[in-house]
Every structure is written in C-alpha cells, then in structure tokens.
Length: 468
Image (tube, rainbow, N blue to C red; front, side, top):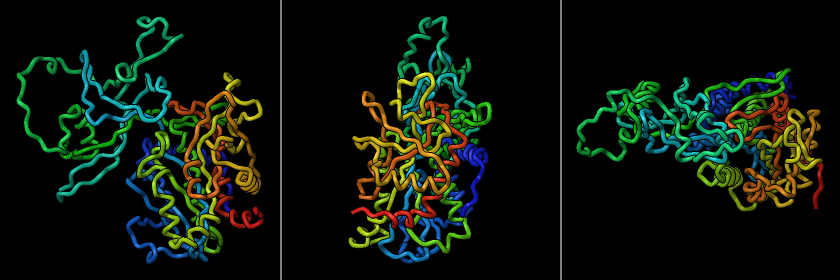
C-alpha cells in the first residue's frame, strides 16, 4: 500500500510542476522526467513493441513533444488484458505568438498574438508576461532540432486604458481582441523612427523567419538558447504569466495559479502512476495494464494528432491486443477515468449552480454527470469510482449543470466512443480559464488517492460487480 502524503506536501509538488510547465511541451518533458525517475523506460511508437515490451516493466512514449502516454505491464500480461486509464489534458487557454508577429505603433514595438481556447481574456491585462515554447534551430552538423525555451523575466504587457480615458470601464469593459489586445514589447529608439531609404526586397529561403519578427525578439530568443538569430528557423511560443503558482488562503487551503485546468489533474495522474510504478509491490501485482494519457488541444476540441480524438488510445489498445477477439476482450475489461477540473460554487454567484449540485473546494473528488452525455458518467461507472474513493477514505461530490445553462465537456465522451467504460471526474476550482485560477491544496491529494486506488485495485473491484 502506498504511503499517503499530506495535502500541502502534494500541493507543493504541484506548484513545482506548474511553475516549470508554462506550455504543454514543458509539461510533457517534466512528466517524462518524473516517470523516468520512477523507472519508466521510453519507447517510440515506431518501435517493434512485440519484441521489446515485457511483463512487469514500465514504459512511456510521447508524440510531437505535446502528448504523453505511460503504462505498466502486469507480470501476468497476455493479449486481451484490460487497461485502467486516467486521461487528462495539458493545454490551457492562452495567447500565442503569430507566425508573423512584427508590429509597431506610435513608438512601441508590439507582438502580434492569437487567442487559443476560451480564455477570460480581460484577466490578461496588466500582467507581467513572458514567452515559452519550442524553437526549431539549426545544428552544427547540418541537421535541425526542436528545443524548449522559457524566458524567466517579464518582457511583455497588455496595458489597460486609464480610467480617465474610459470613464465607464467599471460598468462596461469591452475590448476588440484584434486591435486592443496587442502586447507591447519595447519602446522604439528615436533613431529607428528616422526615415531610411527603402531597400529592395532580397531573396530569402522559405525557412528564413528573420523578417517575420522583431530582430530584438529574435536576439533575445537566440541568447536564451545560445545560438545566433539566423539559426532560428521556426517556433511555437506561448505567452505566460511570470507570477509563480503559490499556496494561499488563511491556512494555505488554496492554490493560486495559472493552468490549474488542467495541469492539476495531469500532475496527479503522473504522480499516482509514478508512485505506483516505483512501489516494491508493483512487480507482484496482477490485473490490468495501468495507463495515463496526457492529451493536447482539449481547449479547442481535441481534434489533432495529439488530442483525445487522435489514434493515441486506440493504437495503444490495438498494439497490446492485436487480434479482433483479444481487442474485444481488452475493451470489455477496460475502464477510463476522464479527469478534468470542475466548477466550485462561487460565494458571489450562488445562483449559477443547481442547489443540490454545488461542489466545494477541498470537498473531495467531483463526479460529473450530464443526461445529454456531455459527460460520459453513468450509474455503474460512478458506483465503481465511489468504491475506489472509499478505499482511501475520501469524499465524493456530485455535479450536474442547471437546466437553463449550457454544459461544458471534456475528453471523456470522445474517448468513450472506443467502447471503454468511462466516468468524468474532477476537483472543484474557481476562476476557470482565468490567467490566475483557484484550486484546493487538499484536493491535490484527493485526486492522487483516487488514481492510486484505481491502479491498485480496480480489477478486483470490477470482478465483484455483475452486470448482465
């Protein structure tokens, strides 16, 4: 049996993970490091798994630096074995640098950005912003590589207009996301404002991006990576808030942080599988293949090579059970917990919740149900999850949306299309999709406990349930 960490200790580990993971690329890299520390071996999707995978071993693979699957093979593994899967997503609403970002106006250097996902965009005003992501650079041997970058200091800001120039700002704050939501990078030096003779356009290679971005920005990126600006051939850069994640509240009961939706669940899944895989009990445990799946692009619909609608889960199951019969057996024995954050009741907006379905921060795991199947939970699945939570002495909360409000969704319903039994759960939080969100420090351990119980005992629990 795994040792239970104190809530604040687990929460502090979450802070470290989130502070080191301003983008999905960083989150995947940090999750991989945690798994490797626990003895997981990296494999490639292109490897011949039938020759390399062994019972009693632990593996993980990544796709395009932005999605990760990790799994443990039980000692008694055979084709047709089920999978116990925890699925999360690691992307969050944010701003992303455009492919051509060079802008300037009235003496300011600006950076063109595009909104990603359904963010609360006004929360990005007047924040100390920086850049992180991945950069394609040339190597000395003539090849190219994609390197992660995280600029630690604030370099960008989206300033609000002074109240003196917008007198009704406190009653009707509206802004145009294209023209009034452009970050400033620097002040143009006076000599740069002087007129210079126009130069004839020079022929450049297709992969040369030097004219697409401010030279000062490219120089900063190059300096961070210890390369020359001309060695930069492309990048995907995200804006992020440099203010770190912290514990807050009178008794450190809160986590004040960006990206709680859904690095919170992703961290808990990685921590649970890593601790389970690192346990001395693991080589002797029988049952399902235990798996975590960290997907990208949930905030924009999951339709991508690294999203939940991709081949990642179906391919894994098919490779572990390659015949039609063993595949059917595996799907029948499998179970998937889709874990995404849920809406805690807000003390200033209590009418936004159905009165009997009002989850509290630190009140335990939330089971999310929707009759229209925007969440994939049903009574059989929720019963199993509740019994797993009971094994760790945890608490359960229920959430259904009001009938007069639209219901959100997550990766659960799309993954349930495979035929795997699926339940949607999460932990309660406030300010979802803001640049600074609020979650519960005790709920970090609540999530880890559920996933740990799932990996340790699902097959025994499932065998005790008869469903005709």
